Length: 170
Image (cartoon, rainbow, N blue to C red; front, side, top):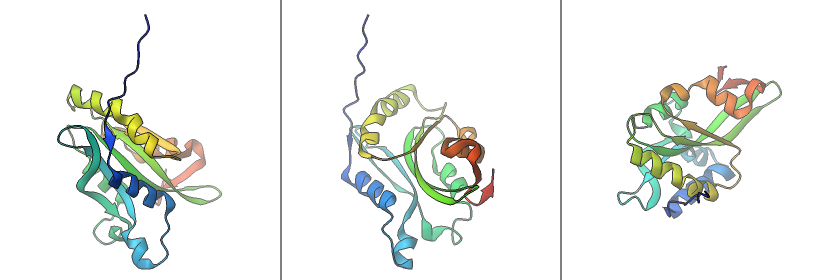
């Protein structure tokens, strides 16, 4: 018996692609531009479930860190809904023994408490958004807040080579 994998047919909004490009390229030169750079952004399906869009108000700007946000990773995890799925981009800052790095991580958030239909739609639409996110080196799927701890993320970013994540030792 041969099973065909069928994509969901979900589209990706232009704004989602623009945000990814801006986060990836990091072409910020002035301090004001750097403050406006996104540290984390959460994406969701539109009401009609036909398009992946930016979730209103669900972002952390670099300029918020140290002002309204003390721990950007903790804030990011708290922004994810307890009972529904999401996609997210997180601009991870980490250190190896040799250097400091910043790299984007794609997250599929599919908590155990999310409805089965939501999990299925998000899982089958993941390829659509990932195709738009060319060059992402790191990806993780999280099924609850316990999956999004510093040690787990450090492992996804480079395993035992990582000595610190977001300024905290791992």
